[in-house]
Picture 1 (cartoon, rainbow, N blue to C red):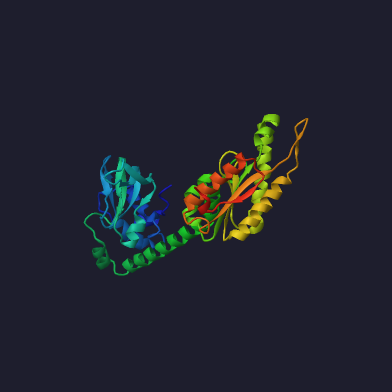
Picture 2: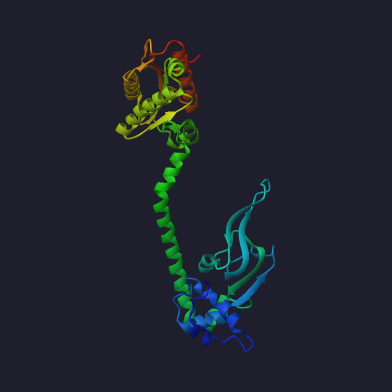
Length: 349
């Protein structure tokens, strides 16, 4: 478990005549830290000589913010939690780490000679091994061990470098999964389109001049659903979504979105008015080309009401543009649909 050092290390340890082997065994567990793992047996003995046991009762602090990290700890028994306190108007503490027996605490801060920025306290009675022991400073250790101390400094720098590399590697490896989780959080489960919540949350970071918004509402959709049921409606929405996603895929940019109910559309960056108009009419033709549905006595033919606008050419306020395009879409749909119309700010009442 924690005690993988060979017995020859213990045989050269000088801990005093009354020190039991079991206690020496506990103290030697500090050697699992990367700081000491490559030391010679005699050098490890010097470390153990300056190591001690520490007991904390539940609720007692191990360290607090602003305190310099002058020691590292290995938890043998109990539990330690690390937390930050909320601001005055906050509610409770924010726990950022929880340590169990066998965990090293504070070795990275110790290696950097940094100050703590959080509290650590025993969440239950705890027994720890600490280096260096109380009453022993690193300055005194440097004087006593002039050859060993530089090794610890070198190991500290190596450990910090390795931790940074490992962090960068983990970030690189998780980049895809982070993006995938981000996408899933904003994905409409029925169509695979981006939800409107994505637009609400991310527009400030993705907005660029020119940005086109094209909104679509299928005409007479209620007739299809009433005659063939919601399954037919869902199937139709999947076909519409495929058309929208195909546009962004071929373009190599932009987002295909579902706004409300059966209202969908496109958000296209680097898209001026001429391009937006072309995409709007192309979308109208694609919707009309969806195979008709047999309703018995008649066939349901697809068509769509489409409204579009470009920021900032048609409205300098994105929120105003979005609201204006949506309102124009609804007015066009209520008026019979089958039209492609452009919103411009001066047209609004």
